[in-house]
Image (cartoon, rainbow, N blue to C red):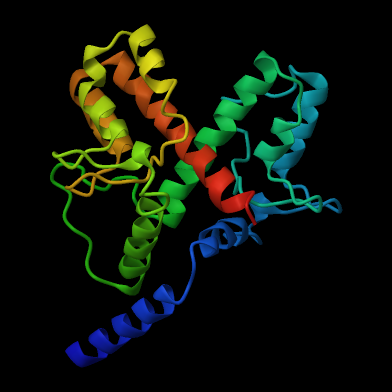
Length: 242
């Protein structure tokens, strides 16, 4: 039994390591593509694409917070090779575009966390480590691929405590005012939000845990920014690049 498990994991790891980082973009674009909520029309548009197209025309048509919104896979491309977020990017500058883009980027970030990395609840106090399985090995590899992307850029470097700039802000976000946080983030837009600290934690997880503990509004605001940054980073580096 043990030999079978070892051989199985070896095959999985070897198969994974043969892939390059661009496979992440392919995985996301194809994930659950045939599910009902991701059904595409003759133009290749999902419900999410069409919501964006209608929202652009009518403005008031969609309540983005409605539970009726069919939140499908936000990385699926239509026949014009556009994701819903890329459709929104073509809109004129303004509050309508900014509002829609923030929501779509946060949706992309959340989708990556849940479906690509299985990482939504990683590092929660009292949570047991997952059993080693093929899926666990795959997700661990994906986390490593994302964590090492652009790791040599100064903005993604670890300090002597094993923290990136984004981790440091997460650790200190309860000490900032909203304006101070905004100033801090102005120079961090290109940072990789998937780089982990020495404990394996994402900046997003640290910010969320601090909010859950202290109910600090700036921690919540920072966690939202990080989720949007995750969606933006994946979109620019792994989806649009293909």
